[in-house]
Length: 288
Image 1 (spheres, rainbow, N blue to C red):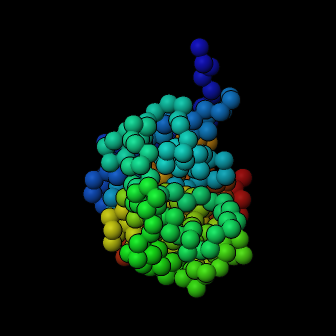
Image 2 (image 1 turned 120 degrees about the vertical axis):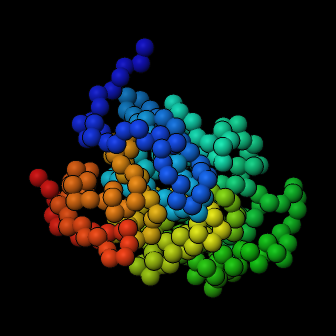
């Protein structure tokens, strides 16, 4: 018999009855859903009984402190990691039963750590078109146009002939985001997409992701550390701590002074923005 781990006191205060059927759709029908997900490594629950939904036409943010389980949860949602318990569905289909060819066309994933690839930036972005090609098929002019358009959106078209391993970390991150856009899947998972970017390109990247959700009805799910960016761009946020879901909903309802103090251990002044469901967070000092 597997021993039951003691529950962190903070998780006892999380919202209950937040299963997939209880979450309202912002953009319409559910694109992906997770039910009762848990990931256990050794004697630790890295993800602890998480249920959530991501909707078509919505930018969903996953927020929380270091070690909250955000990246692990995202990898499970993207099918890169198998959960110990629970299941993930993509557009109503069990992810584990979905053919790999279908999965590669429908899902795109951008990791938080970018590798130094010996390809040109255009070659790397064109790899996003591979799931749509037959075996041994060469990219068409249309594929190249889609790739260049994605690079222009991410402000990396000027690097199309440059080797990726000669670019900065932030430039490589934008190239990987362009590759995910070129894939044109229905669901896009991105892990800390703005961490290595300057402020101009942080705003650009999140605006492009939001436009992708709204204009193409893509379900975008992003792990974010910056609470102000999450509040500004996300339609909904999921707040994690100690592997469990503490809260979910519109940013203005989730990112509160009490929650910031409880979960992040920081005193903050949270101000609701006029004519918006968002908030502005001013971090003051570590809480007691």
